[in-house]
Amino acid sequence: TMVIRCLLYLGLVANSFLVRPTSCFILPTSRQTNTSMSSSSSSSSSQWTESPNASTNEQDLAKSLSIWPLDTYNVNLLNEVRHKQYTNPEPLPTYDLVVIGAGAGGLVSSRQAARRGAKSCMISAELAGGDCLNAGCVPSKALLRCAKLVREARKVAVQNNEYGVSFTRQNDHNSEGTTDYGSEDHYPLEVSVDFPKIMERMRKLRAHIAPVDGHARGDSLGTQTFQGRGVFTSPSTIEVVEHGKQLGEDSNPILHFRKAVIATGGRPFVPDNIPGLKEAPYTTNLSLFNLQQLPKRMVILGAGVVALEMAQAFASFGSEVTVLQRSRLLSKGDEEAAEAIKQTLEDEGVKFLSGVNVNEVTTIKQATSNDDLPLMSVSLSCSEHTEPISLECECLLLALGRTANVESLGLESAGVNFHPSKGILVNDFSQSVSNPDVYAVGDCVSDVYRLTHMSGEMAKVVVQNALFKGQWRLPSLVLPAVMYTDPEYATIGKIHVDENNNVVSPVESNEEVDIYKAELQHNDRAILDSSDKTSFVKICCKKGTGTIVGCTIVSTRAGEMINEVSLAMKHDISLEGVGRNIHSYPTLGEAVMGCGIQFINSRWETMK
Image (cartoon, rainbow, N blue to C red):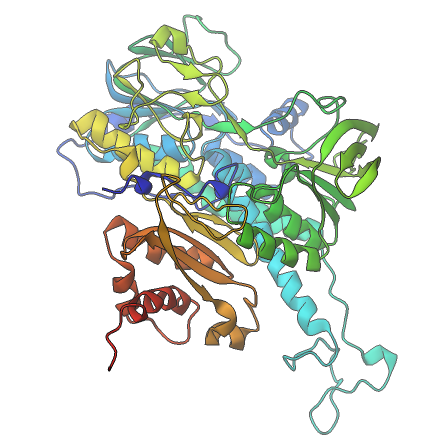
């Protein structure tokens, strides 16, 4: 067996915005009808109110949840995932499964359990859907789509561009049907960006997706939803501390469980050793998507997935973006891929400073209204300058990884061992190492990859193991990871690249591999699209065999292309099998096949 299957390419681990699992196993009606569960989970709520009619308390609550402004779309979002007033259902005598947390892991585990006949409930402390829906995968991809459209529009806004397409005013064509550029007024129009409209579109689409994660959807599937903070009071009980109440109040619901799942997620890491940072109006992914004005200058602390995705997006919108990196980009990832992406972003106006040490953050001005932006100064030393420098910015984005949410859960009362920043300690079955009746999934778990689809897959493992005596193991999972810059960067498998970028060793440093690489500059579809000039597919196999142990793809469609490699690794399809699979022409995916053809060609029989 390949231990490699449990491991992701480490370059994409920290705070990645990735695809969210919107469903779990859809199974036939189970042996138990959940009529009683549905009726017992009925609840009453009042609707949120749009500004300016919202009360001060309502506005403060929305801001504390990092959802702002209170327009139609955010009101619709909150009415789905965080009711303003909520009457919790009457608890059942005992639950088969109680889940603390309402992100991807909590939603999948509680709902799949209900679909499979279990008595389950989910405790939602803040926003159902978690970071992915509200402050991660969903809103970030909405911004990235607009940013790409801006870049494409600018390509055709250039006079006499290669595409033969331009922006003109009406009736600007001469009798030959070509565009008349005879006067200055007839030059192509400048591409402008309406940032408030871009953010409004994001809020609209997020609200459109929200019902999938909403309380009503959970009720319809037979799982109860409690609003409040779940706290263990013993190894087999959880108290729901309702909003506005204290732990131990008699009116708080007490839930008795056979099995429990901790799915409390994580939060952005904020360093405590930078003077002035804690007092500064910095931004993280939790507040970034509340911006209503485009910052003229953005400084990003970090050089991972969130940092690079948002750097490219905001540079496309018109911000002056500077990325502060302590080491190289994607420091644990493929160096060739990192350099290709860095070059693209630099061509688009993003500035990079390396070897950075931030000395101090000074707040020059606080924002005076919801529509205003603050002003900060970041003092730092870096490799590019011999003397310390200062950068002023309206937005300081922290993208330095994530910390597990394990505080105030009563883990000591439950006998659940944990690390204060890494998270819950689990075994291969996603089971607490110290309490066999408690499981954990997602970003709150120690030493697993903090990816949305990892949370969803862990939830499926937990339901099978906790309720059906399964033996599903986390090391059996084969997980791809994607950074959605343009070009995208997708990886799978654990890969180590030495300083010369020519020795790749999976699992053990002394295990040798063969590398097969196909460059997309020779791919017909890439040529016809005028894209992917620096892109490539790199597949690694155990030396002398076709057993795939890792892959890196840089391409505009890398996120789609990596799934073929994931399938091959999961089901023991050799690289030869990939190469012999017929691919549609012309597609970028042929580059994956190209690596397989290289493998086949290296073993051809030839005429003597």
